[in-house]
Image (cartoon, rainbow, N blue to C red; front, top):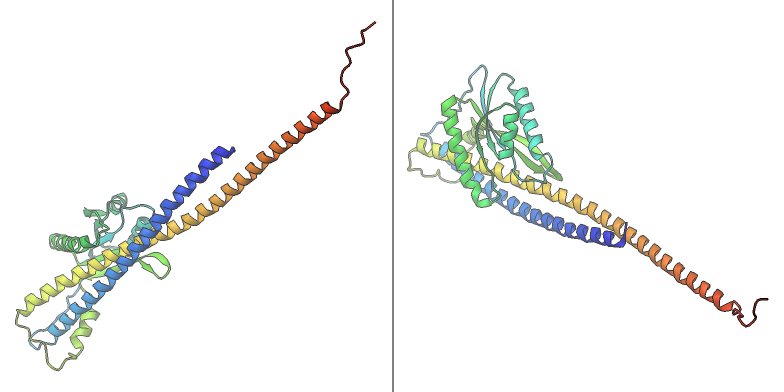
Length: 306
């Protein structure tokens, strides 16, 4: 390989390293933003739980948990994936987890799907799942709440239309140093243990909260808000996991590029040293040849041949 080609390769690899480093930095910043958003969502979820607790503390309100029907279940799954690249098997592993979960937990269930992300929608069709709707996913935090409300409206529509028994949300989340871990969460019916604990717990304040609104309407409004918060949390957690995965991949790519650059530069130095050595050998050989010519006796043309 010539010096010019090595120079071009080193420059191209160096430019690629700058791009990879920039993408890693952007993903790192995005992960921090999503983590802050998750903290805010968790605080708001606690506020809603406190509102439920205040409602359950009223003597005039009784909470009765819903009962699941017996027999084959009708399941609606909201699967949150990604439409961006450089995240490895983010979508495929999630879809495989969904299939294993449904087959193990509800082997005779009728399974319908709402896909968040066009690639997840394509995988659902490949797996012959009953795809009810597909929504694009946005990386903007301001789009999380509107998307959650849109999903909830679609969930209500499908639940009413097909008499759905249970609704699950499947999404990746980051856990410790692990880039993404698939997770299942049942949102309809709501987990009984959480509401039973609130129903049994005593109100911590000196006086019970004053509720002037209709308690059934308030309960319905809190349920809707709680579901939107859960959907917002899982959407945000999925985005945080996606960017964390990309950041790790960019970090690994950066390491590989540095190793390649070191190899190219070493090869460049070796080729350059070989070239310099060849040039020195040519100079020395030329100088020796000139010295030999100088030391030879001059030719005598004065004597004629007889």
